[in-house]
Length: 145
Image (cartoon, rainbow, N blue to C red; front, side):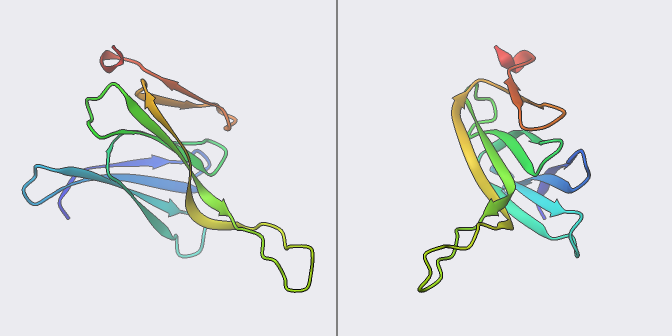
């Protein structure tokens, strides 16, 4: 499996489990990350894999929702990082019926969806509001300077 490190992050309501797996190549010179995202409340507990080319420094679930954020950078010692937000659902595009003017409504599809990436930020910590929706990104500790 070539696993260097593995960490588990539960969503507060227990609906999702995220597993950050850091793997290395056979030469052990190159590290890469996978996020394995489990939908715990769905039949068969489906898993989605998210490959992240960069080093992932932080991973946090929205407490009352289906979204999560990661802090990542090409170099793990970099002071300028990217923050990417994902949702465990995506909205389907409405289907247009032939001969009808109205389109059917959008549906939620259980699929990981990249929402937004903030580039070149100086942060190393993620703090979600207990109610969700609001997030604080902070630079704390030695790596904050």
